[in-house]
Amino acid sequence: MTEPASAARIVVLVSGSGSNLQALLDATADPAYGARVVAVGADRDGIAGLDRAAAAGVPAFVVPLKAYDSREEWDRALTDQVAEHRPDLVISAGFLKLVGPHFLAAFGDRYLNTHNTLLPAFPGIHGPRDALHYGVKITGATLFFVDAGMDTGPIVAQVAVPVRDDDDVESLTERIKVAERGQLVEHVGRLVREGWTIIGRKVTIP
Image (cartoon, rainbow, N blue to C red):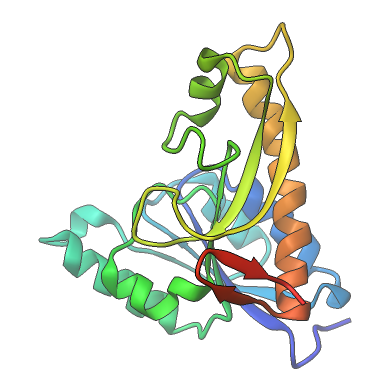
């Protein structure tokens, strides 16, 4: 079966293994999901996320920061590459670069990211470690629309993950990843099928 003509177009950005990308590729294989991954973008070559795109027959592009004289030039180039694929949603699936004002002007109300804590607690790249060291009893994953801050955009959904007494950073991170993937697939599907509104910090899915 092929996707309906109305299937939403998704561009996924990756920097590493692409486990969230794979979850989306698997979900979009079902026409009833309502979306298809039309391209995968990366900031570096030689990563497993690009291999996953190739295996799925999805076009891919690489926009390395080091290839540009300034971050602004890189931001413009990334924006142009993504725009070529006319996405309805852009999803950061472990994309480790902060996009700039040109990208946000083009896609800011439809650029999703996931974070491996319950924001606004423990933003940044060491969320599970910071949560564990702080001694919280519950952490989790947050899906949000990206703004110009560090993990500060309007929140779409959150899922809780209890912290076990015997957890270390690795075990906690792995359990969060499982919850994160499920949340990402569920709510991307809802967004593309049902639509959404953003008013201030409130995201509503009808």
